[in-house]
Amino acid sequence: MECRVCKNRDLREFLSLGKTPLANSFLPKEQLSQKEDSFPLAICLCQNCKLVQLTYVVPAEAMFRNYVYVSSTSNTFKKHFAKMAEDISKEFNLDESSLAVDIGSNDGILLKGFRKFNVQTIGVEPAANVAKIAEESGIETINSFFDEKAANEIVARKGNADIVTATNVFAHANDIDSFAENVKCLLKKDGIFVIEVQYFIDTIQKMTFDNIYHEHLSYFTLTSLIYFFKRHGMEIFNAQRVDSHGGSLRAFVKKNEGRHKTSKNVDKILKHENEIGINNLEIYTEFARRVYAAREKLRSYVENIKKQGMSIAGYGAPAKSTTLLNFCRIGSDFLDYIVDDSPLKIGLYTPGTHIPVVGPDFIGKKRPDYILILAWNFAKEILAKTKKYSSHGVKFIIPLPEPRMA
Ligand code: JHZ
Ligand code: ZN
Image (cartoon, protein in one colour):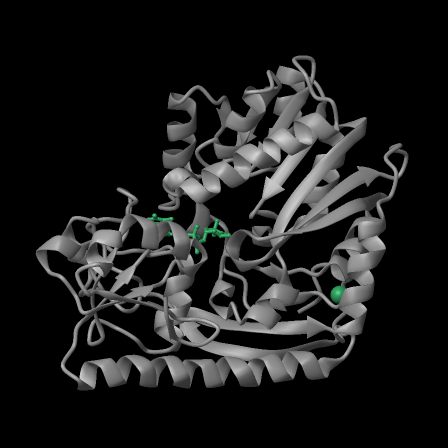
């Protein structure tokens, strides 16, 4: 195996979460008795460019062609992407003559924001069911993976782009070399590529290890991203830490010939990464130790509740809960059900642990003593909408970095 960024073969595995099923492979009832596929879930460090990556890659076709994740299920996210589109439109003076392309555009959540500024838009989305939702809400979408053909089709239909965005999708791509080259072909000379990826520094510091699952092939830092784009004649001219998914990095990338000035943020973040020791294997092995300890803490926390004869439900059935529940071995013996507001998940069962996913009304029908907030990144929004239950004594638990009452 070689590093996705620098092709080096000196990769050090430092954390294994065992074998888990695919994070979004929720099952219908009739499949529960069938054998479920599971795949090794482990990450390694490239000693050269410092990219952290999965040791085992599941083919994209198995994960993204039919997708249960619809971005607009959360209001927090709707606001996040509306603000992102607004900030970019204002900063780079986009107007009706500009084109924004979103890769992995899901239900069109970000492009809707650009439309408010009259910017022309087109999305690329491989999941047919989700691309259809976007089209139906008036967001032009190509139902495809982002490949050379899709890039050429966009140029033919719309011309070259001022902005290409890729939020929560760059880490999902195996061949990021072609990804970057296709973005370069798509962009105007002075165009900008904006990516948002989960930030591995936040993963380490906030213990959000449940974000490790098969869809996420790469776990970036600014250091590894800069290394990568340099190889493609591109440069990161600005970077910002944003709070989505427990901490992400937004990077602004230009072609080398582009005119945008380099922000001081870039050096500031790089310096910070250096200071916390990303060049040193120790912080990675130490992280692994803390992950195993977090598993024990969470398990004894829920075991304790069960020992007292109390019941527990979950709130949110995000992809990351597949990692958390399988790795911590918290199954239907602990959680009676999990509530999710997404119609695409309701009625299905969680991968590996087979806990039923139900709609929000179910809490009223079968009130638990405790609710474990599995979509902890939206704890605020979830607590606000479940106030009536907490005022009736239901207690809410945030699982990470260590279990605590919300
Ligand atoms: P959420 C997704 O991961 C998928 P997930 C993807 N693979 C990715 O890379 C990451 O994002 C970055 C539910 N919910 O966004 C909706 C409610 O039911 O944390 C979702 O099922 N009610 C592309 O799946 C889940 O929680 C609510 O009020 O880990 C949240 O999933 C709210 C706020 C959420 O991402
Ligand atoms: Zn490397």
